[in-house]
Length: 334
Image 1 (cartoon, rainbow, N blue to C red):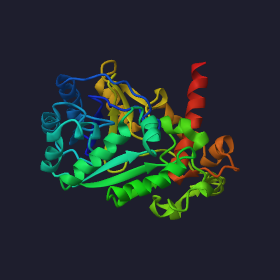
Image 2 (spheres, rainbow, N blue to C red):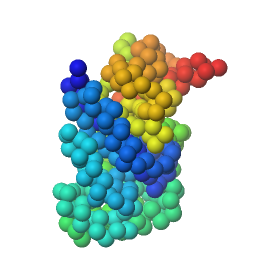
Image 3 (cartoon, rainbow, N blue to C red):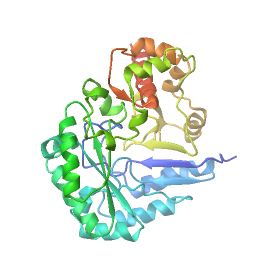
Image 4 (spheres, rainbow, N blue to C red):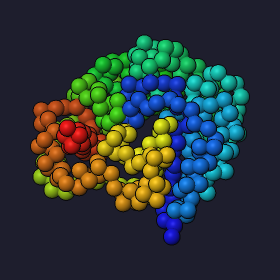
């Protein structure tokens, strides 16, 4: 019997040129995987799912010299065509003149580029010198090829003033599609909790560009909403089931950053039928822990009622849960 829900497999085949300080996936290994491995993985899952969508990337799409062939292979391995998500490799945009033409040929209408401040700050957060200049250059290349550009600006206490200046840089570069946000609070961005932007410190100039600002909450406001909430926060898939497979062939859900408590299994070490069972049942340590504690209890354990740091409510729930998961999982290992 096959499961009717589509399985989206995201395999980290080529890694990423960056080491972003905000990356919600954390710092994953950058090993290369070959076509044979990709084909093998899809064949393993095909007997269990009616439809599969295959992506050969987790972090940076098209980060490979054979991006044209790779896109065709991804499509061939899929029963439902993979999406482009308005994403592209700006690393490749400025190094391969053919890439932007190919992006247009495969139907790309818009590409999102991510900034963290001005030159030194963006280079620091991307983890690569020259990243800011590449982003500016990529903006012009895309515009010259009639592909719209969106700028995503991450903000925290360290870079808030530079984000204001970036709005001027965007205007100079004729970019009008801009949004600012704080990012989730898992992976590397969770390590930046101490400098997470305070609601009262968001510059006035930035507020019109802030994503969903009217519904933005401070941590203290989140706590007020959740302190009497006697339900469980159990992350669930929406329409399709999405799994991430890292280059060491560990399998995870896409709910939060990969970690031991969230690991479903390993393609080489575990039987595929058991991996599928765990995927469908949500049978991983982290979700077992999630089923054992109420949101009101999570708030008491990990919430700071004096904090003005901003969150969406769902991101805050995940932040609380990951604190609990880490504590429970680590205590089991001791």
